[in-house]
Length: 114
Length: 112
Image 1 (cartoon, rainbow over the protein chains, first blue to last red):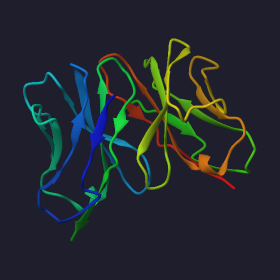
Image 2: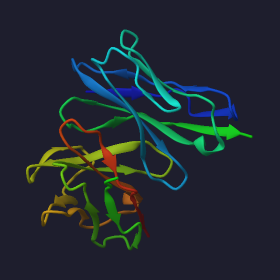
Image 3: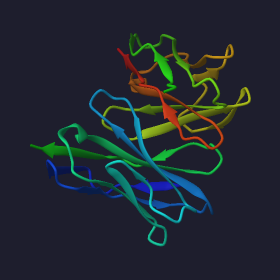
Image 4: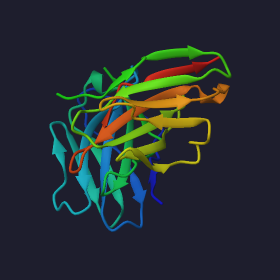
């Protein structure tokens, strides 16, 4: 069984500052994938970034980067230069390789303050 | 960019009624999923579907739920006799080997 833990229910960050959203995971699978999704108030799930467990380098996508520390079982999302439009719920999720189900964390509600 | 399409975006139904939520996955994807999210809570897995059969289902996915791929494009979730606690956002997703998971924009189901 897989488990995702997001310990920050809510965060407030000043616009233009960087923010780190925490995610730790637990799995017995030897290989797996880690995902971050953004859910704005409109409700849709927007894919942000992916990290495979065998990837040597941390994933980056524009202003998003994933700080992957395999030994610590953590996959924190870093958003650089935050914008007002970044205000949303953020979910960390994982799956074993092989198109199996995603297991989600409870999410972090990020609010960017002007 | 290819997308997963869900209809309707909102549905209100009376308790005990049957509802069918519809999804059109990305055309070259072979793996299909339904998730639900009760308001303000985490996203929960319901069922995965591959090669015209259920590959995995959660304990939430009881006999009241069923899925079907009636033709080459649609993927449906049926709830036979809705309960108040079925009120949630229902997300369809699809994936292919080597690809990520693409979610639809969801159907908000309200049972009254």
